[in-house]
Image 1 (cartoon, rainbow, N blue to C red):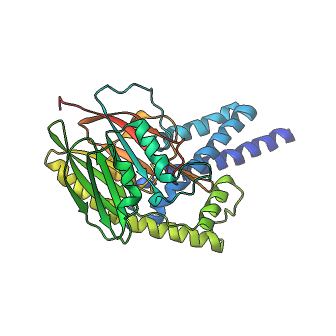
Image 2: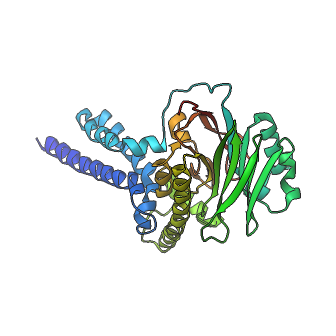
Length: 362
């Protein structure tokens, strides 16, 4: 009798903890609904969603092995978090791209300063080898150094090359299609920028928007601390001095990034109102569960979440694993096989590439 009471009490306690975890997962999973400019703390809480989804998975294992009826709690939790789960880790059936689809590659090249092993080619030539092998039709590079001699070797296979410079920070676009115009999308930032490149593809003008939004600007030590928190070896007390400073920094950066994404979405709305075809790519420095990502996905198709399978981390440093590079397209394009080229280590970001087919019926 006593054992039954103890068991019943433990089940209630663990069930309550599971429900609490689910409620936090729902809050963080749908945090992209909060405006990052007015509610930055709530907005950036989506960074924590994978952790609470994982904890809910551990609860599911517990219930399966110790009291199977309790498994309904985490299962309902996963159903409630279906949309953020799919955003973070989509599952799609693979399909081959049509022979006439165009291949787009987007990559933050870290100013071509990534430290390579001594027995390897430098970052510049490693990226060139990849481009020569992949033969993309369009290449969008972010965080390109301002000195042309440092990156011109990347361009020798392309006749159409344009870049936009802002305070020594370049967005470079190389294309086998004519680039008939370009313009910087204005917003206040010392080192970040977005630019539109107008391409002539099969007789149609397509606006390609390349972005390098505000980064978290974390030091190596701060990145290491975040990695420790994620893997469980660090201080997870949100009230500790170090973590309060870290959270404050992330919140402030999230707030500063919001006007940048709003400026770009305003530009996209303007272009789309004219019936123009749009492709958007670049380093967003935001995960799929974020205000920035949601603002784009409300207007365009997320090429990765609609075609790929898995979390697709484009940034892996100091124990941090995030997908912060994205490709979006307007509805007149069908994306195929969006993928992270995680075997290429020539920057702190992996390249993201996708095949796109223009729908001529629309």
